[in-house]
Image (cartoon, rainbow, N blue to C red; front, side, top):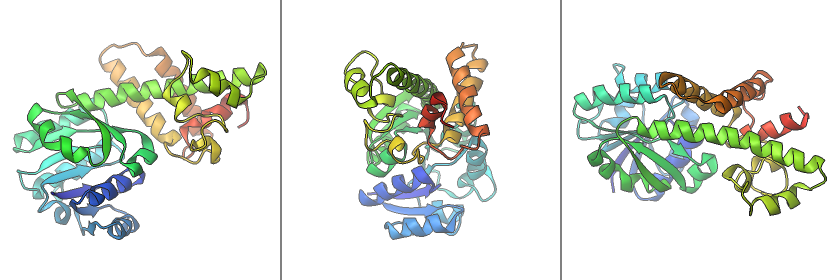
Amino acid sequence: MSNVAFIGLGNMGSGMCANLVKAGHSVKAFDLNPQAIEQAIEGGASGARSIADCVAQAEYVITMLPAGKHVHSVYFDLDGITSHAQTSAVLIDCSTIAVSEARDRATPAAALDYAVVDAPVSGGVAAANAGTLTFMVGGSDSAFAQVEDLLGNMGQNIFHAGVSGNGQAAKTANNMLLGISMIATSEAFNLAEKLGLSAEKFFEISSKASGQCWSMTSYCPAPGPVPTSPANNDYTAGFAVAMMLKDLKLAQDAGQSVDAATPLGQQATEIYQDLDNAGLTGKDFSIVMQQIKGEL
């Protein structure tokens, strides 16, 4: 088992940290929120007083942070990871950030002799808690070989996407597809209802037909068919509107940088911006169903 530093104990990071402890690793945890550290301690991790304290003896350093600016600061500020972690440590960033930001992190860290990967995740809070995340990993073959087993303690699908930044490329494209498919699924359920089908009957049919997708079968935006979906809990966030909007904006920026047309991605961004402007930032992104039905 390994000494692991975990920085960033939010909705996703807390569950990931807990699963590393359950797997038998010695985990030292840090977050700016003292309550999050206390929760990690209750789960079997040890608490750190600072980033320096967290990473000093770590063999692996995992970060799960809100945005690229936070990743850069945690890595390269005077009290940051690269000032205090041993160069033998493997640095794993699981945050969702821009492809360019991931590569801008990897290059100077690798120049300091660290093995570095970007390893964003898919699956949401439920998968983070259950240890069933999908990891999309960018980095060298040797770096991927060093992290694959460790990531397997937090997820069930571990993919090597290629060079540094490619993990973020996969995540960006995947989440654009997710945002679009959630809107399309919501439109389909609304249409089916207005044409006389119950949500349960439409789900029964479409989940076995050519229209089925993850947004329907695992995260149905219509109340009823999937009991564990946020639609059955007042759209309490598993993956918040704010996070979907952030990811869609990353996709738009990425598309513009490589001249890739994303017209549906642009429309999805505008729809989620409307939800954000309406004060629904913290609600689950599947609440778009209510917007389409005119119930907001």
